[in-house]
Image (cartoon, one colour):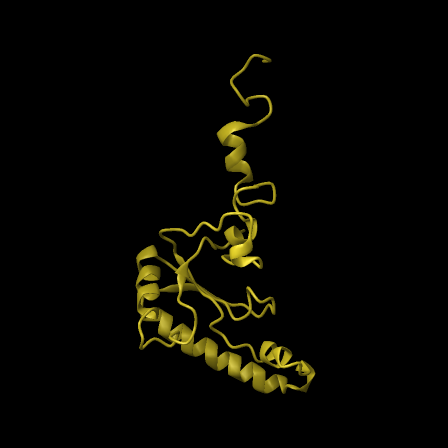
Length: 163
């Protein structure tokens, strides 16, 4: 119908905005931050980085000290690393942080990013079964006695498992 409501024919209005939210077409909100809770442009990004008030998932940026990234940062050759030793260190870290995070509730998913991008390296994502458990973990990890005391402080993130 040509004389329909505003935006009806073009798919505009609120429906259009809802459809493009968090995608490349969204010129207001950063799609990378929306998907992974991090953006390579950081504070210089021209789009908004919306942090949720509540989430089942927390992000602790750069918590895992990736030995490959450390060698590269020192202009070394990552091939010189003993992969078995790197894997053992990773497993130890994973077990330690998983045990710590489980103190606050059921952890449904734990992901440790091995991407070497500055905005992603060592990021730890923990998805809890409940937003309250995620909030409790976030609060505890801000504590000076926390294993994350050396790392940037955790925050809630939009990241949820995308099917």
